[in-house]
Amino acid sequence: MSDIILKTENLTKHYGGVHALVDANFEMKKGEHVAIMGDNGAGKSTFVRQITGVEQRTSGKVWLYGDEVNFAGPLDAREAGIETVFQTLALADDLDVPDNLFLGREKTKFDWLGPFRFLDYKAMRQATMEGLERTGVKIPNIRNTIQNMSGGQRQCVAIARTATFASRLTIMDEPTAALGVQETAQVENIIRTLKKAGEPLILVSHNMRQVFDLVDRIVVFRRGRICANLDIKNGDHTGEDVVSYITGAKTGAEFEDAL
Image (cartoon, rainbow, N blue to C red; front, side, top):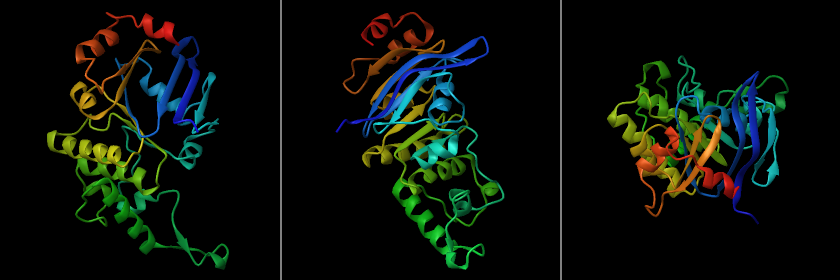
């Protein structure tokens, strides 16, 4: 059995005459943590949106755990096991932690009553506590509404949602961009916990220090194309190498030729 859990072939997205993503060939292995880096407008978020079904690709193919997938929307991707933490977090401010984790997939009881079902708050609270424990997220009171939480706690709730539903792949889009030092450290510890558990993760980030601390490999996008694929586990690459690819000082021609 192949250890490739995610693969894209010639993944392309055009917005009219704008070629935002061109022939993106990408592979990811079981348990691997991969960072996606690049300048603003390089194609990073466009790539994630095509994988998760937020947008429909212009052309190309996507495989998840060996099966070719064509998600009609993000709900399809979520049901297939892809959990995404977007910069917007997609949390409901007026709801508490369990309600946010189970938003759109609530647990019910007395289903035998037909259309008259009741939310199973006890089961959702129990599953929430288990998800928080798996990720190491510490929320003093899970009954507190999201609007009364700090930015770091909100981010942690969004991340805990991925563990609660045993995701097959977690994608985080700039998870610490708006956080302070202490809150950033908490999120990074959660990512390390996911790594120890063998859960694969794609991290979109501009934070060079963070990337080198947390991931196995860096994929660099420039002008809608993948221009570099750098294995950083053995220390062969530096932040200067990554910046060179991002700015175009290195063209990545050797990488394109290898595809």
